[in-house]
Image (cartoon, rainbow, N blue to C red):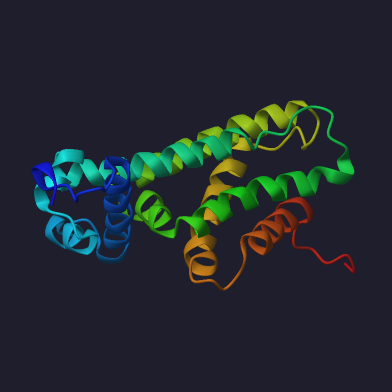
Length: 199
């Protein structure tokens, strides 16, 4: 062991990243209250003093994980806005690609997704902010003529967040469907509806 419990030769960033990775898995599987700092440091092969070099408490560590999730999700949502001048033939693909990026993030970081979208006390605030960002995007896109002017984009945004929330937990994280397929199905439903062409 090195000074103050740090593994000799291990960089601080590697130790911190290892603690975050193990903690994310523990929190996602066991929840906040059942997760113990002692378990995290044991799995990381680090000491408790090393843990406290990087995080003031279990709560602080959990907060970092929630912030990581929030920041990435909000960046993806913000960057999904359709810019003016998109050809109508590529509209569905553009929307699908934006949704797929969010779903890929959830699949690549399933523990963060479970923490930030379902477990954290802030999960509801995160979903509310996501809905607000999507609503802003949709209103901008509506003004560009991409969507009908008589649609209440607040309802559309809230519905979309609900769809994302349910399909992530029932289809995506269990591995029943790929990000690409889930995104494509959502876009088909929202843009084309449910009525058969035969009707």
